[in-house]
Length: 259
Image (cartoon, rainbow, N blue to C red; front, side, top):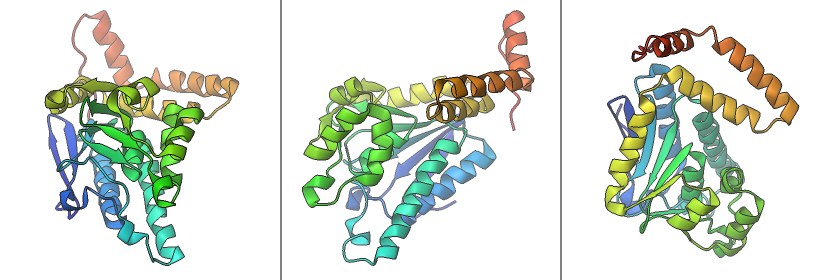
């Protein structure tokens, strides 16, 4: 499918979604987010890709939401924009594919949200920078707070909100906002290698891994264990679990049940 604001391709069971508005510093808008929703929905339905990487064209990963869709607009229009934003991030949580942000440059405001909203983040050591800059323009980064706070906790999120300062890749790694920091010239290679490592496994099991994590993390401990117990019991009857354990016993590579 041809898109206006993004590019999408699949290779080796890995999807590559590129934010393709370099002239606007890959700013997000309602149409761009609707295209991403369409892309993720299609990937979830087809399951031809087991992992999805998000990257940005040009020097900036993502500069946040396009201010032209906010400044001077009616309340319902701005509400609609951020409802689409919320729909996108809830969808990203629900699809079976792990989503990896490949951050080569600035990820600010909604761009920081996009990185934090992915399941994993690989960042370029020198180029990647993260910030929630709303305080600098009198417009608090409310939606980015949701994903960022779940990644790095209260104190560091509030520091980012109150100061608007940029956090470099190493600091973001220390804070838990990113998983890996790699040399800038190795970013694409290292991100792809991580995606390939994940893509060797059953997409059903990868999807359950996402589901269980995001469901249990909001539960009380006893409720989480009850939920986990039921998931473990039901998974024991899944074809991929049966195949995987049989393959281990027989000292061979498993053959996953694919769609």
